[in-house]
Image 1 (cartoon, rainbow, N blue to C red):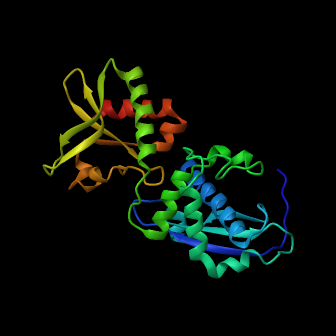
Image 2: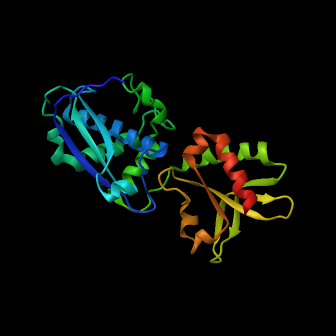
Image 3: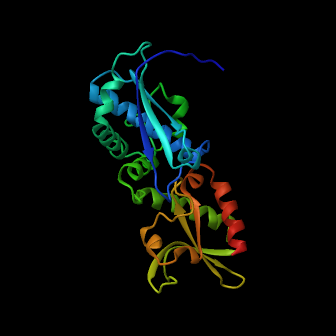
Length: 264
């Protein structure tokens, strides 16, 4: 492994998250969300200071606190790439609100309206080894959760696309044991009517399970606001599956659902 040490200027920003959001150190979901935010922050910093791309870069680390170990606190820092520092990064320490506002704009407004990342928003030759980790929609949700609290909505177009991909593979692999349907109205335990993203019905006995997507950084919680609003929703037959798993490891997602459906 090759590396180098040099003294430079940095500005460090602490981000705190509230449940259900969590950034477990070292896993793929955390790396994707934070690598994306770092690329967007670095781009926003260079744009604000009107300097060349690459003169400021960004990295992240868990906070050195109990919250950092638990996944509720993380630190993002920007630094000058010039050895000895050029004073760029330190100028932004007092302009954090504007910096992160522009970061959100970069994440949410790709000129090509890409699904995850492209050369018009986050990709470059410099970060080519990280292209597979860049996901602007996940990064946007996480950053909004840190800055605004609450549960920022997961993009509807992304949800629809992921559910379509998942449904097709479930039908292909598990249709001998289950019938799968999209967007079916059902009555929840509190008597409210909700739209089930994917309804799975066991052919042998007619037993039903509800399948919903969850954000990669809010495991086990449906992205659907209506399902989250149901009183006592964890007691309903809801199985949540990580959107990032559907996108990157579809066979593993279907295998996990098969196992969980059979134990319902």
